[in-house]
Image 1 (cartoon, rainbow, N blue to C red):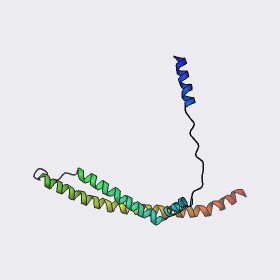
Image 2 (cartoon, helix red, strand yellow):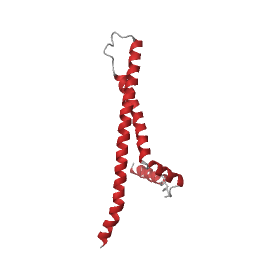
Image 3 (cartoon, rainbow, N blue to C red):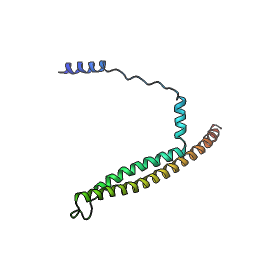
Length: 134
């Protein structure tokens, strides 16, 4: 029994190939241009607003589908469907606006703060290194 398990483990180790190491490459001009576009605070904010709006629409549809009308017993099936569709539209639009504004404001504030911190670090680090070397 021990001879079989040893033979199986040696076959497994011989049969398994080592993964190839990915070589490091410099970014292409297109990749650099794409990074420069994405590093723009306005682009980040607009994209976050649009994605937040999409998330709000999906959440509005989901949560409106879970809502039951108060007069459910007296409503016909057609009236219930119309009520649910109307609620989905209203909640989707409301959540869309809310999440879009939240995403836009948060992303803009975060981007501006990040840029300012980076500017401060670019100025502070060389000066602190100079004093450490003295």
